Length: 448
Image (cartoon, rainbow, N blue to C red; front, top):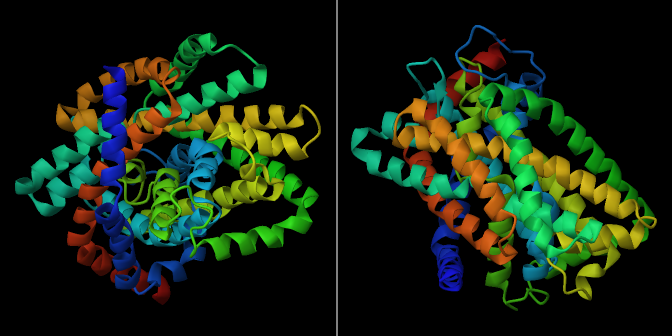
């Protein structure tokens, strides 16, 4: 029975991620990019000032500061997708897939600007005073009650898409590989992970934001230091790797499918999993920011794909490509990344570094993703009932530890695809509202 389910989900994932959805994500993002006339990109420095707290207002509605909101969103995105997902992209699509991840990231920055601005514009408040935000509230409040079925569709898909299947699966695999444990231990690892995660996620959004704001800067800096060390040791090969990425981007020769279309799909899919632009998860977190200016949070949200895909994913890709392990290894996912690190760093150092980074990245993702599921369930029922999703989430950690990587990838990819449809559609219909807000805000900033 499980094999039938596994095969069905794999077929659905392959079908849903074909050209119609890619046109929606890339086409929608390209529309946002052109419709904005690239204006938000001109205010990237201003976005950094917002992030640093220059415009923070404790009296403004919301629950998290700009920095905490971005940290929590990045905690969910800068995770296993950056360490393991890049390796999956290289194995399935070859070096050229990284180029299409870059293109997707730039387009994704525009998508994040629109969708996260809308999350602030159309957020609500529960009877308990907590902030309610995300694509489902944008749809209902922005497009009207008649669009509620589309909002419900997003929330149902979100209940599955925000499960920790991929993250837990790859963290468990790392521990088994590095510590040379038997596969039988995966169940026990899952139980331990569930217990640790429960201490944070049961504390609610404020505890998640607090932990994420401490964890994210540390993990990004540590990862940069590690990968830069590998690249310095392999510095003579780095220019060649960049050339390989660009040359393979339009040939598809190294792709498993052997076709350019397959290559593009692989890059876009892995980028979507990595930075989540257009998927709809980030607006749920950014929508909780303490601000009276929606455009400010839209600008802050743009920084996410830049950090996540353009920086972190690129570093991971260069580390794997420069070592050459991707050419002659049957490994996939985290096992390939681990092999790349171990091939350059002194004996044992690669294991220690990767296991440390995986633990930090994975837990940051586990903490943040739980909130997305809580928000979706709260929308489908009542906000006060959303917290019960945490118990489903904790139980799913144990299950995810023992399933196959292909099943984990296909399950989350399928749900992400379904979530993207309402998110991008609502963003396109309401894009003029964002442009009007942006015009007013940027005029005010310029006049000051």
